[in-house]
Structures are given as C-alpha cells and as structure tokens.
Amino acid sequence: MRCVVTAGPTYEPLDNVRRLTNFSTGELGTELARFLIERGHEVKLLLGELASYREATNAEIFTTTRDLRERLQGLTSRPPDAVFHAAAVNDFEFGRVWARSEQGESKELKAGKFSTREGTLLAELVPTPKVIAELRQWFPVARLVGWKYEVDRTREDVIREAEKQRAVCLTDACVANGPAYGDGFGLVEGVGEFEHFGDRAALFGALEKFARRV
Image 1 (cartoon, rainbow, N blue to C red):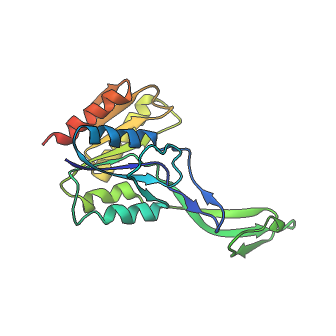
Image 2: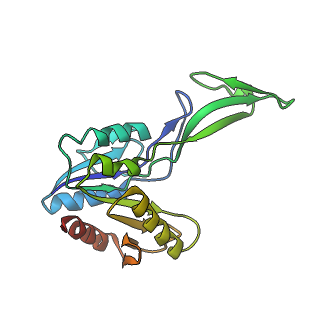
Image 3: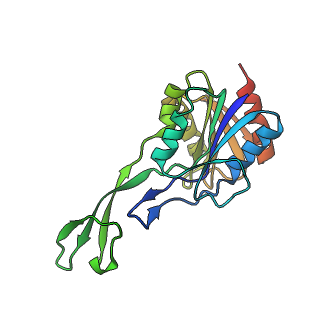
C-alpha cells in the first residue's frame, strides 16, 4: 500500500518571533509510519516542525495548518491508498491584535514583533481550516483514518465524538484516545462499531488490517 501518515503539531505565528502550538510530540504517528514501513508499505510521513520526537530521518516537514493542507493537497497527482491523519492540527490561528490602555481603550497593532511596552494585548483567535474535512475530496477512494484526542469528559463521550467526526468528515474510521478516553485506544468504524486496543502495537496492527480491507 501507499500510505500517508501525518504526525506532530502545527503552529500559528502571532508575529515574526512568537507562535501558538500544542503539546503533541509526533511520537505516535512517527511510530505508526515506522511500523508500516517495516511491514513493507510505501510510506510518506508528514511531520510537524515542532515535534519533539525526531526519530524519522526521511520525514517531510510541515509548519502551519495551511502548510500541512497544501502538502496533503499536493499528493493528489499520485493519491495514496490510505491516509492516517494523526497530526495535532491547531484549532485556531491569530487574527487581529490590540493594545489596551489603562483607561480601557483599544488600539489595533501591526508589527513584526509586538513590544511588551504596549502593555496588555488582546489577540483574536480565528478557526483554522479543517484539514480532515477535505481529505475525502482530495482522496476519494483512499482509506481515511482520523484521530480524536480529548482531555475532558468520559470514554463514552470521546467515542461519540469519534463517531461524529467520521460521519461529518466522511472518514472510514477514527482513533479515540487522550486523558478522557483513558488507557489504550479505541478504533471507531461507525455508530456502535468500536474496538478497544490496550497498546500501540495492537492498534498499529489493527490499522494496517483495516487499511487493507476492501
């Protein structure tokens, strides 16, 4: 199979020296890519520049959400058989920025580097493009697997969110994990179609079998 794996965080610049990102290390996606390579598959790993897990030597590096989006869209000329979208894509990017005076007045700022002399700043957060929602359009016949990482609520809630992601984004499956899910991983293939895996090795094996399934 020709496989694409995304891993690690995107980031969004506040100015030319500061940026917003998340705590994703890129380890899970990188290890999945390694597993698939060892199983004989052709794998392209797209890895976030700020990923702290740097064990892949042949990864293609992405930066912002828009950069990741362009790199994925650029693969349409030779579409993969399976896409495992494990990257932690920032939900927000910065919009406008204002300085607030002691009198409560706001002034919009534009600068390569915002100065602390401006005092308190107010930054607008704007939703980033939903990359996962565009994968089916770009890769109409590929097996698409998304991820749903949640911190709050319960395992049942995370599974429902995974079911929702699959239905809305037209993916074939979704991996549920994170503190809200608890130990291990859940592979959701549809409403009521859920299987739990206790560790990465079991999950990776299941994902490969799932991607091979016609």
